[in-house]
Image (cartoon, rainbow, N blue to C red; front, top):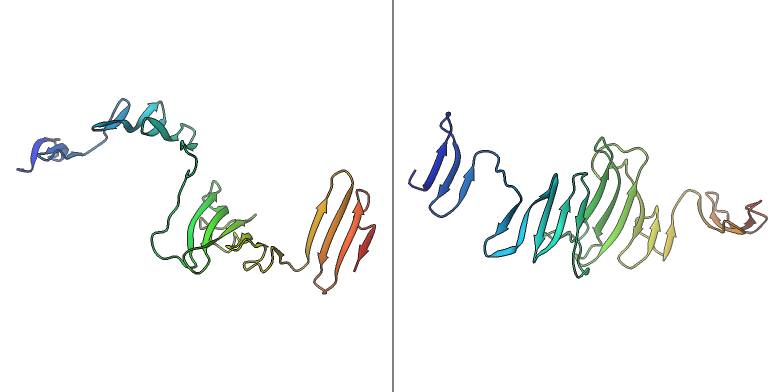
Length: 212
């Protein structure tokens, strides 16, 4: 092969290593290194294996990413302004910009946090999903429903995908409770029968008084 400066083959006549005249190397199996692969002419930028079962990436002489032997991942940034970015490269007026998906041991999505486009490609809502009965790995599966949304205007919706107020709670029997563990409680309720009231209570009784 006139394109190969060095070529090593096994008994099956298959390349195990080749080096082209342009310096490109091809390996037909594992490449074993004792520690790091270093960028030529830039010795403070490298990646490799600092210690047993640990993978690390360094730039500008500082460690930026580490995957430890127990699977934990640490990302470091000296400035702190930009720690982790997720970017969707096509136009995303209403779809997901990025999602962090939490999976159980059977790979089913039990919770997720998503940034969802708000319709104009320059804004997004933050959506939280949780479940007690996950069905598959997709964070958008109906078995893992939306619980809370912070829309691009700052409105917060609980069980509401389109909150119209600073705090918008939607439920068949929506209630909001303010509770002091040592003194009193305040409950605001909007019932399914169109009856709404404000309840006042203490530790012994949740509704010692109320206003309809």
